Image 1 (tube, rainbow, N blue to C red):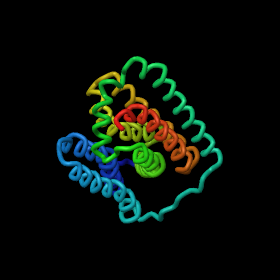
Image 2: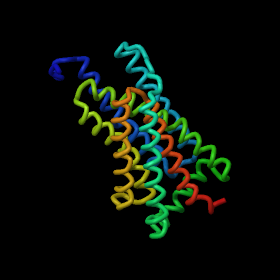
Image 3: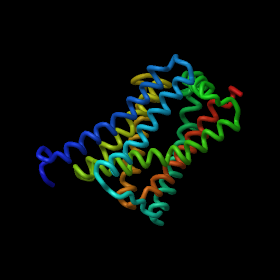
Length: 243
């Protein structure tokens, strides 16, 4: 690997990586903390504009700056199998932790009102709307996160560093914006915030490894979608009393 300090293209790539690693956390801070007391329309506008930037930047960088042709690998059987089994294992562990530990201990009692308020602030006031939101996040949002964090961030890191650091750094970046959301609900520095944040980082490691192994986004996407579906099933247990 050539020295990174002498290559203008490498310096550009590093700048793009730093931006990609930090922008989601900045965006989350804006609409989740800075605009927390603002009208829901303003929050939605800020998030929408930010998401356009976040989704568009990887395509702009790869196509317009790096002059690469876009290519999407087809699903690989082993990738889908590993991704499916991994997703189901995580969901099983999640349900076990919730029903055997977190729910009986009342761990969610303090966070439940703020979770319900946030959901209502999004206009979700019925089981049908919550189900629609769940499908959106499990199917589409998980794909967008895999596209951003694995297809772009992890792949860009692999251009400038070894596999291990690329997996670790991309996983920490993936975790960072979740830390903000979790801390708003469970408290800054609380055990649950740290515990769930670590779980997000572990997911980021697993999905980056699977993407590297299978050379396809479909396995990580399937795994991520299953996990998000499991999270929303647990979330429904918390918010259903509000309707």
